[in-house]
Image 1 (cartoon, one colour):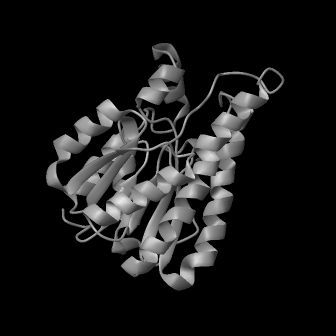
Image 2 (cartoon, rainbow, N blue to C red):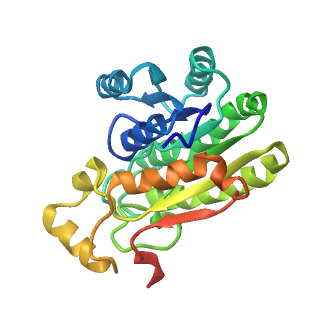
Length: 249
């Protein structure tokens, strides 16, 4: 415990699922966290649960002005930002390439991809004031390999893009002690997964995983805490896969 003393973090998509688990673990390890989401009711409830070391802001991650407000609030409440967990994302409809509309393609890419760019762009100045920091961009195993059952081409394209911008930013800001890494979860038991897969499909997915189960959000949070902490001080520009061995086959 207390692996993140003095850290100030922003977590996007933090009202439920993995984002909520990450926020809880960061606070438990000593960080102060700005919880952000478009779901204000759930986000405010989580921040209240976490107490004095958390605040909530409703954030549309595709809004540059919204990001500026988030960084300003985090600094006002806790000090310069030293950790960003860019967790917000959507799957979009389960649809083929030819049937996907341009509007939906652009919406998925805006939330999964453009928002990561805006997050990096917005927190760098604050991290420089903090003397460095750690940016953790949540991608997917669908950003590593082509997974049968990936809901649509925009999801795959956006998750692969997160790898690219992560590596670029890692090289750009390494001299400034700002580390940038991506995390690639497999099947994790979250509201997003249960909304995408029915119980029979979850059982089938579990059977394809060498460990014969799906992961739990807190297991991903353990990786997030490591990457946010000084324990990973020499790690940047890398992909961290957490999938029970699915992509090792």
